Image (cartoon, rainbow, N blue to C red; front, side):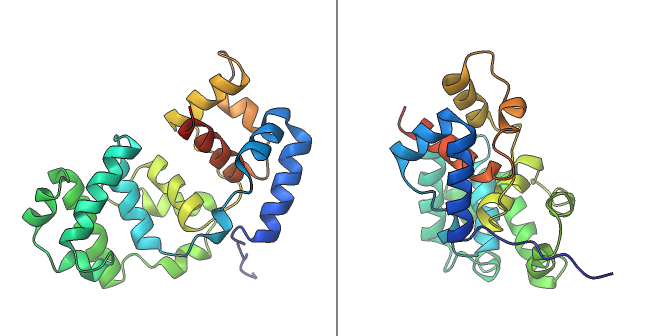
Length: 205
């Protein structure tokens, strides 16, 4: 059986996504005008850093997560698995990471280092298979895996139904009784791009 190739968002796909979203949803059409083109296609492939950033961000505001990430960067020599394995756990905790998050990140670094987690393999997996692989890691649940699909692998059609920000933005933009899953059906096959616009809307409100 031939393997399936999963294409990440490209500049061309972003153009198609914005055209589709504008034509299928008046709210999205307004958001695209206000916020301009979605930058997801331009993200560099940095899978380890993307996962670590997602772990740091769990249950924190964007501002708090950014602060801790800057402190972590001051402790590690590089935002790589080797950089994290070279510093003691106490140093990571002193940067503001909880003990649990520090352990999760070190375990992630160890699995990348010894090959138990291979990002090249993830590139060839379906969205659900990527999620199934990642949720086996300590400290990584479905939300973190979905953020990795969007921001790490740049998959085009990921809708994180459990994301509180997306739920809130949906109610603000589509009505207080709007349901994210139902509204999101009009965005397919570009839910990742639509999600970026909802998060961007929240940043300004």
